[in-house]
Image (cartoon, rainbow, N blue to C red; front, side, top):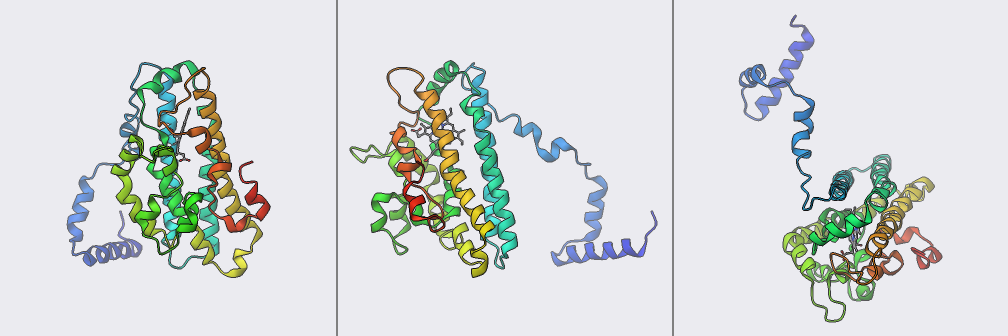
Amino acid sequence: MEITPEIKDRINQIDEKFQAINQKTETHLEGLLWSKPITYWDYIQTDALLNLQIQRTTLPDEMVFIMYHQVNELLFKMILWEIQQVSHCDKLTTEFFAERLMRISRYFDMLTTSFDIMGDGMEVEQYLKFRNTLTPASGFQSAQYRMIEFASTDLINLIDHRFRATIDRNTPYEHAFNHLYWQAAGKDYQTGEKSYLLQEFERKYKKEFLSLMEEYNTINLWCKFKQLPEADQQNADLIAAMRHYDKTVNITWVMGHYNAAVKYIESVPGNHEATGGSDWKKYMLPKYQRRIFFPELWSKEELEKWGE
Ligand code: HEM
């Protein structure tokens, strides 16, 4: 290989990079000599990824259930990845915000339009058998789903409607946490006692959630939107994109999920308890839950008819 001035220049740049971190360029060049060429499977970690599907039963459709949940978690991670970039960007431009918002929306659109994999893609008889081995776990315990909520909107929009008047920006995070809308699904609605499902969820994630609530208090997607120039906040396309995201997460996905739950859980006469044990038929419906990320972008009538 001819050592052209361009190559010399590259070597100098590499040298500068390593000097800046007190490293010897010669050692790193020697390392290059012995490093293994990359392959697709090492880079994508296909072996690790394809070894994460462990059934608890012998029923083939349990595999569909596990894998589709894993697909959801991967997409949740992609969504959080984009939100983090918007939220932690100090010099945010409208262009960057809009472009990342579209990415986020596309990921959630995928989750919504593919929900038939759950709704129609498993035999009810098989589902009714393998679900018994999953009690008392539930998708309710998806931490990333909650993280997306914290990162998308002001905390007040995630508080159970019955307690909103008692909570403001000065309320301690711990108190707000205990009044999040989803606490209703994990508490015995007669005694107020927390279910095992909720206790375990909090034991694992509460600390992380409290820290995220604080982190996103001033940098969630809604705050970032409000920090854009006034004229851009009035931009019809941007408003439409914000409303689309809100509707997809809080109505379309929720209804696809609810309809799947009705189909499977109610396909047999008698007890219609969910694996997580919530009063799910009431809890899951958007018109009762009224979780809305960007209420200021909806009219009074639209808010009143939310989820109907
Ligand atoms: C046949 C498929 C499914 C059924 C029957 C089902 C059923 C349920 C039920 C009844 C609940 C209420 C809590 C409880 O008591 O368990 C719930 C909550 C939840 N599930 Fe599913 N689910 C299904 C698929 C999924 C999938 C694929 C995901 C994706 C990760 C998911 C994520 C969630 C989340 C995030 C919640 C909490 C929702 C909220 O708090 O508003 N579920 N599910």
